[in-house]
Amino acid sequence: MSSLPIWRLVPGQRLVHRCHDGECVLFNDLTGDTHLLEEAVVALLQALHAAPGPAAILAGSDGLPEADPDLLDELDEVLADLAALSLVEALPC
Amino acid sequence: MLTLASLGPRELRARLRGPGLRLQTGPFVTCVQSPLALLADTLAAMYADYPVLEEGGVADFHVRLSGSNGLRRLVRPQVHFHYDGMAPFQPLPLAQAFPMFEWAMNWCVSSQANSWLVIHAAVIEKSGLAAILPAPPGSGKSTLCAALVNRGWRLLSDELTLVRLDDGRVDPLPRPVSLKNASISILRDYAPEAAFTRPVADTVKGTVAHMRASSESVARAQETAMPAWIVFPKWQAGAPATLTPVPQARAHMRLAENAFNYSLLGETGFQAVARLAEQVRTFDFEYSVLDDAIAVFEQLLRERA
Image (cartoon, rainbow over all chains, first blue to last red; front, top):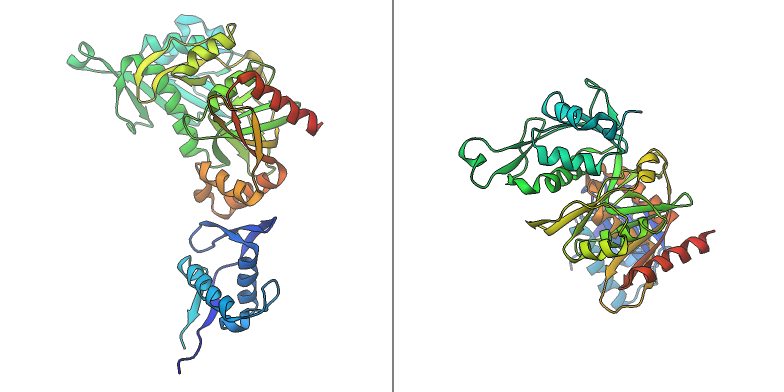
């Protein structure tokens, strides 16, 4: 049985952002890009900033809904998208 | 203060042909050299009220617009633009000397003025409050801007909004308003007292003409304004004048897309746009009738007061 990946914020990201009415803009320290994200996604990044962890643990963190199978699938997709933006990365198992 | 008009045509041409005309536009001084009589005449008409500095003063930009050499002088003559000795653009037909000067001045600011957040947007002011109008070509931005400045609003710029990085205020850069194609006759009818250049056909933007900035806007070019609104205009045939609010985060993204140096400024650019998006109300704006559009801007001003 393979172990679940541990996600972390990419070192160097400071999560400089502004939120308003459920939407946020976030400055990517590594690429210089600005991303438009839902507030829940920024909450996910903040949870990773506090401590790396697997998706199952991240669900239920402050600002994020409790884990269920559908949410975990969705969370995996979001984390993969954030990894493509160089915001998060999976630690080697 | 020495103005371009006070030089007189002989001195103007002598400076342009010789050491250069040091022309002040907003916070910038440009040293302009050119032997072209057509350019000298149009500068005299469009920049009469602008300050000029004495020879030898420091300039932010050094530009030269020259004619063709050799046989090219006789057959389809062209105008060449040089910036600090480089030729960043292809030459254009000689008749386009003044449009090329204006485009080159825009290029100088948009590519060099990184002490500001430079947004591709018109900006106008009334009662100390600025309305910023970013929009792609063809949206009616300059037409709307030209109409507003002929109905009591002050021109800060029709093309380049300079947002100061320290306090978020807008520095004026009033220069002639660029009008294209059908907008030229619309504005001539709308503001018959305004001064326009002769239309120049067959440019990359179609037929273009420039409307002179008012003497008041030039005289108040050191008077900054506080951004109060960002309005993304779109002319739509038959559309009633309608404002639609833009959420703040989306306003940030759209402003960033319209800023020339957002990426170059890095986090400073992010913070400047974030502050701007937070301090203004942002709207999409559809309109078809200029008077109706102006009434909407007056209503925004009344609501703010």
